[in-house]
Length: 147
Image (cartoon, rainbow, N blue to C red; front, side):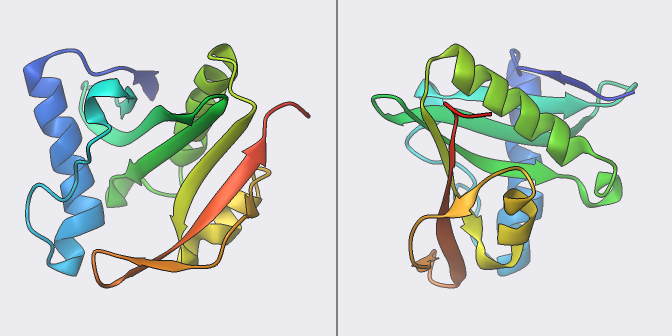
């Protein structure tokens, strides 16, 4: 059984960031440290853990502007993908965004994953941009005041 909770210990945060690096940055040859951004201290962090308390998925949420939430670094370990863990994380992020009173929830999606987010009510809100020199990202948003 997978549980969603917040990392609280130094060890949990270390494993949390290690998973983000392994899945998002290492394959592109990006250096360690690129898995973090300036919003870490003001973000809500989510982790999916299995029965052995191993972190198998992560995501984070912060307030981008008044009433606008932004989530990023949604990652599921390759061996746990296609099991609904991403959906669980996204649901938890959206619930927290609603609790915080955000009217809009946005993300920067890789161009190759926009269809995934569209399944959950997100739409493309901006033209693609290049991140870290090689990753094509597109802004996606979801209105939280409806449905």
